[in-house]
Every structure is written in structure tokens, then in C-alpha cells.
Length: 374
Ligand SMILES: *Cc1c(COP(=O)(O)O)cnc(C)c1O
Image 1 (cartoon, rainbow, N blue to C red):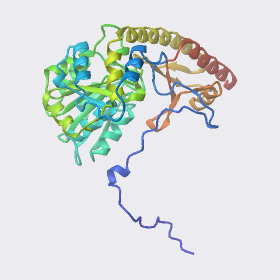
Image 2: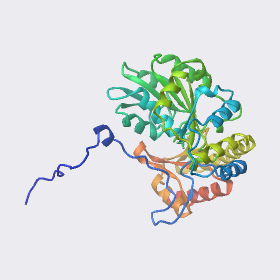
Image 3: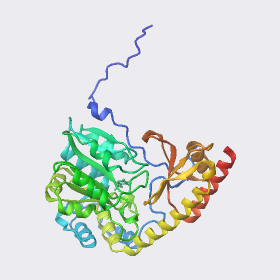
Image 4: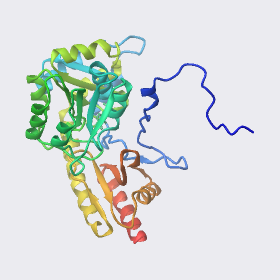
């Protein structure tokens, strides 16, 4: 018997080594281990659903036999109008994920480095490796973005820095002063990607200054999405705003018909329903505050909540109740939440803010499990 345990030499095409190093993105679960469907508080979707106006417009879009507008012209014009931006400096994508991947691909390759913060968005590592570049992970500060740590990672090989603000999965946020300091510390040829996927959840008037930086400088890209507060995750629509040189690069390599017909129609109408956005923001802020205070009331069991400005909360488990056991208890109550041991967070669960009734179920499950564990 052979003692050689090596795999046989593979036949067929070989993956590039940097593709082989990628751990595929793990989406939020929607079913338990037994296949039983769970209420999904694992993907930061909007518990209020979608604007009725957006749903109507999506249903009224022309049939799928025709290609969509390759340039999402009407949608870019509407985004420009709502946000006060030049539509020529906006690029739409198949979700903001496409924009993030294009940004890495357009400006980095083998031998280059892209920096992101520890406990950052999982897509940054994938986008970096996909183009053959090397991810560089900066230490966090209390689960948030540490500007000094990011700047300390910059080398002559750095091509881009990715920052989600608010950050996913931690919910932490840095203000305009810190963001400006980060930008000011970067060489002019390093791209700063400011991912504002949760920007609409910030308190009214709060702004990290990303758009202003992108307006004034040639090395800043701000990304936004229709997947979160706009309740259109299933349509896959995002956008980026940057200087003409960056937008030109992204347009060269994006999918030519990258935003669907129904998606463009729905997103246009969703932008016109800012009442829905406001209502979603207010409901989230109230439910989040209520949930955080309930988690804090379990502090004697080792539970705590990382301060969040988004539509989810990272709950830390430092006592007898482990994050895994808590996740099981929450699943038994019918809910899916996110455990991210692969991202260095074995002691935490990211829980999307649902309706108050849903959060009451989560709190009850946590309380019972904490008592049972102690
Ligand atoms: C959800 C999310 C996105 C948005 O992804 P889409 O592709 O637009 O659905 C981008 N960045 C972060 C940090 C997110 O959490």
C-alpha cells in the first residue's frame, strides 16, 4: 500500500494561486441546520421591506427580452439630483460589491497591496486577492477604524485603502475629521475607498465627509447601495462616486449591462420615496436603542454591545454563555443571525435590527440561554 498521501496531480485548468487562496464569501443563513426556514436577521436587510412605489415601478418595467440601459442614465441623473452630484462622476454596479471589485481590479494587481481594517467587510479580502494583490490588515481600535494604524500600513506598494463607514460587521463609525485625516495621510496615488453601504442609517445631518472628499480629490471613491435601507438587495444595485479618472477606469471593466431593467426602474422610484427611507432610519434607530439597552441589562452574564451606527449590532459574549450557544438558542426561537469566527469574531454575533417584536424574541432567547448557562 502506498504511503503517499498527496493528492493526484490535477488534470484540467489550474486556478491561479491567488484565486486558490480565496475563501468564498459566506452569505447570511436563512435556514437552520435541520433545513427549517428562519427569519433572517443575518444579512442587514430592511425589516420594513421595500417602498411600495419601488415595487410598483419594478413591476411596471418593460419585459426581460430587451437589454437595460447600459449606462443607467436615468438612475444616475436621479442619484445626482438627490445627492447633489454630477451624474458623469457616478457609476452604477451590480450591487456595490461589483464597484468594490472593479476598484481593486482597476488599480491593483500582483505585487501590490490593499489595506483594510481588521473586522472589516469580508468582500475587501476577496476583491484584493481576486486581482492578485496582497491584503494588508490594519489593527482595529475597539472594533472600529484606527486611522493611525491604517496609515502605518502604507508602503510604496500600497494601491488602495478600503474603509466601510459605518463598518460591517462591527457597526463602528468615524466622523468627518478622522476621515479627512486618513485621506490627508495617504499618498495622492493611493485610492481611498469609502464604503457607505449604511450611510443612510446615520443620524440625520451626520456625514463622514466622504462625498466632499471624492468631489475635491482625484483618489477617493465613495460607494453606496440599494441593498440596505432601500430594501432592494435582491435587485443587486449599487453605485460609486469619484473623480472622472476613476469613473473612466471602472466603466472600462464593468459589465456592459450590469444593472437590470427592473432594478433601474425600482431604484429610480425608491429614490423618489425618501419618506420610506426616513421612516426606515427612524424605526431602526429606535429599535436599535431598545435592543442595545436590553443587551446591556444582560451585562452580568457577560453580554455587551459594540456601539453601532448601522442597522445591526455586534453582541459580544464574555461570560458563561458562548456566542455559539446563543446562536443555537436564537435559531431555536426561529431566527438566523451571524456568527463570524472566520473573521476573528468567535466571541460575537452580528444581529440585524428587525422589528421590535422580532427583537423581543431575540432578547428573550438570549436571556433564557444566559440564565441556563450560568
Ligand atoms: C451590504 C454591504 C455592501 C453592499 O453590497 P451590495 O453588493 O450593494 O448588495 C457593501 N459594503 C458593505 C460594508 C456591506 O455591508
